[in-house]
Image (cartoon, rainbow, N blue to C red):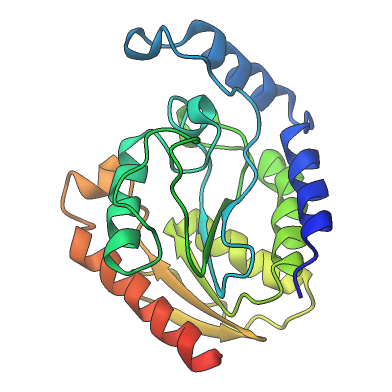
Length: 231
């Protein structure tokens, strides 16, 4: 059974985190300066906890919040183009109850899926340093440990893939050698988890066609199938 109180305590700890001076300064400056199209909106400007069904069998791991996406709205993959792409695929595969999400209070819900980021603050140029990555890593380790029903992990992008490998290793599970390589639709079994990869739904990938909607939906459908098999 998922310890909801412990998960809530972890979420509060994540939101209050100030471990990385560069990220704290950046996320708060972005929230202060804003951009013209969101000039009248309040910004979250803090780290982002995970979001979704705490009983989920599928965990989705991305890189970090977008400066004017999650850093603005207060929910991972909410309010930016990457999120628009992801929610559409999650809705198509039955994980989300709607195909778009623009605000954290819009009532969107997930079924059997939980979403988290490897780094919880928006980094400049979407590039956290190794030290910032490592400062944030314990949060995902503790989150996955508390999400006791998870059996399938979907890594969005190479950064998410590497973060998941480090996370499951930190939980005491042996990572195969040679280390599994990232690639779209790659799969590997590690301990009780099946790790599945997708290219990240960044505009760099979606605008160029490197990642299409059907490609992402196929990975999520595969995750749903694997979760059902593990039940």
